[in-house]
Amino acid sequence: MIRVGHGFDVHALVVGRPCVIGGVEIAHHKGLDGHSDADVLLHAICDALLGAAALGDIGKHFPPSDMRYKGVNSRELLKHVVTLLNDKGYVVGNIDATVICEAPKLSPHTALMCANIAADCQVKISQINVKATTTEKLGFTGRGEGIAAEAVCIIQSV
Image 1 (cartoon, rainbow, N blue to C red):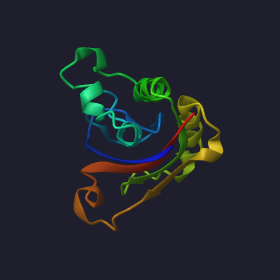
Image 2: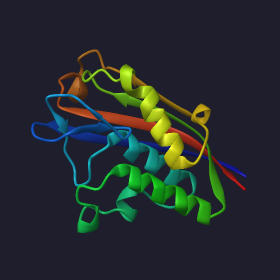
Image 3: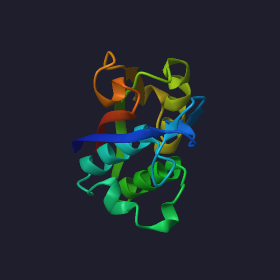
């Protein structure tokens, strides 16, 4: 069986936080605000994977009210989601994701993001694609107020 999932996430950019996207800390004068490390890309991917398996969403599994997830590295969340999928008899087929922001520039970092995601999902790097785009200075991402990410995935039963 093949199942498809879609995920979306957004976090505000604020001073005094690191900018972690795809498990990569990126030098930037602002970082993403959130309960965990606020890795917008990994959160969108987690939601896509959970959705494909009909397992709810990231908020159900890792609620911001749970202090165990305060400041947590989102790669740990992704690994846990993959374990949930495996327990249900699924593996990741592929993931395609887009990060939406004006800055920082992400193209120098997308290969490492793909490598991190592939490792955490226990798949080949050729099964992961991360790209970035801008909104041509329109909207909250265009004004540099936040960063958004979308992800689609296919999971397969084993």
